[in-house]
Image 1 (tube, rainbow, N blue to C red):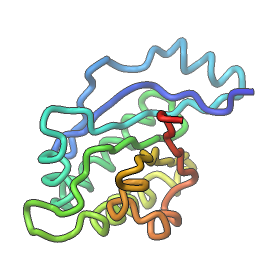
Image 2: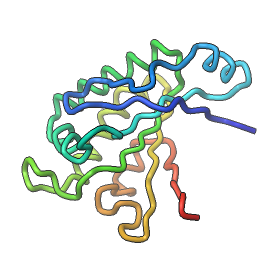
Image 3: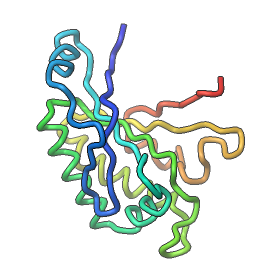
Length: 160
């Protein structure tokens, strides 16, 4: 009944490099998932020290976003993965670098990832945290604008 299995976790840094706090996914798990017809997905988070500052700096830099898209594609290919899920929970509504909203920058990031991964057939999904205070972190996640650049939204509903 399982369709997707995600390796927890790789992070990114403000330059768009991959940080691996728990190491690479074991090939035995990847092979087992594939042998059962389950897609193996890389899970990317912003769970780093000072995540809001890091995400502001990352989203402010088109070069960092391009660098990460390239690094992520290489990582997915190297580890025989089928795609990626993003769990960004620490994005400010306004970017500290230019005092502009981060929502359009998140969409630009999604476009860059889509353009890099989708042509190769990779799955792209976003975990969207729900809280009563900010309803899907709106306006950071403009769901209508993001929709064309992903396969699935995963709604995280821990309080329920």
